[in-house]
Image 1 (cartoon, one colour):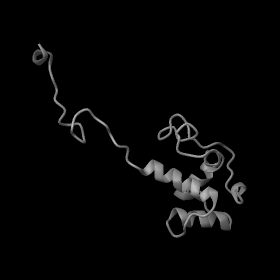
Image 2 (spheres, helix red, strand yellow):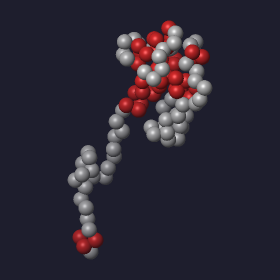
Image 3 (cartoon, rainbow, N blue to C red):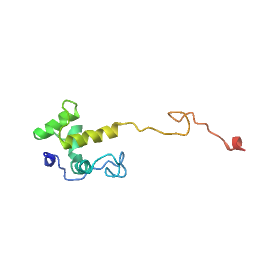
Image 4 (tube, one colour):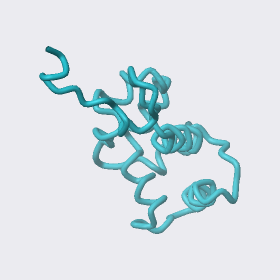
Length: 114
């Protein structure tokens, strides 16, 4: 974590939508990645979305990594890319029926069951 302090934010980062039980209980991230996401996630998200301009060489490099112009090398960059890959994956829906969208699920009425 050589450039960890450059990205440290005053508040902790949580993603209750994609990780309602927290990053540490998701079973995806290592302890150091969880620490990076909690401590730096607010700044990393602001840099990626353009809400905060990059200050310094490390933050400019991070923005380039997010835009696909550079390969992630630092632990902070790798943790954020791993996080972004996880939230961008579509969740596979499992159903008892053989339809991918669930629209063709038979709707039985009580009359049909009796």
